[in-house]
Length: 99
Image (cartoon, rainbow, N blue to C red; front, side):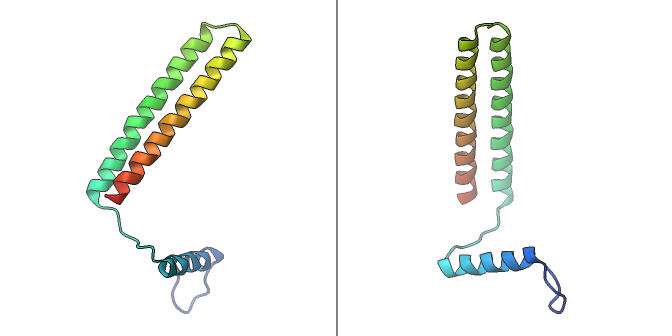
């Protein structure tokens, strides 16, 4: 952060207010351990691969389908799969952060 005598930016002031609000609410800030960082990185890599696989499969299905209604159905399924995978990823990352 800035030196005590130097003027603070709006960002620094906002961060101070948020930290104060968290302290008043009883929210404890704990640094992430190396093991947690490794677990989070592994989770992200796994789900990145899953999302890439889903993208490739989706594109492959789209190339073989010319019916607009079928293409729309495929798009909806793909969006649902992406949302499910990102939700799973975010939940697992949150669990890893908590320990």
